[in-house]
Image (tube, rainbow, N blue to C red; front, side, top):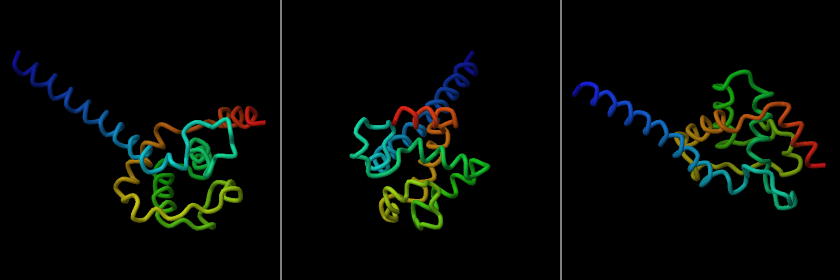
Length: 135
């Protein structure tokens, strides 16, 4: 009986740690990225200063074959952005994002990238549907 309680307690602690890590990564995104990269498409597009996060992830999914490649690109690009590395065509509209060196650490950025990959992926159908609703 005591062993069962210990196992249940341990599982609860591990599960809450995983949830906390997800919440922590999402909170990092909100604090460090969402000021420019909104999660939901605003009704007034003139107020957008950067491409929406889901759109960015759609283009990442088209450009790279693996989650690890996407993560590596996000970390590299956010810390050292160049036009040559830009994946999103919206760089023409918004310009090149400024480097976030000093604003976010590689460790934080790695967590954010993992969260984005797991939570903000957009299928081609969803992307096309969003494009149509923008017209």
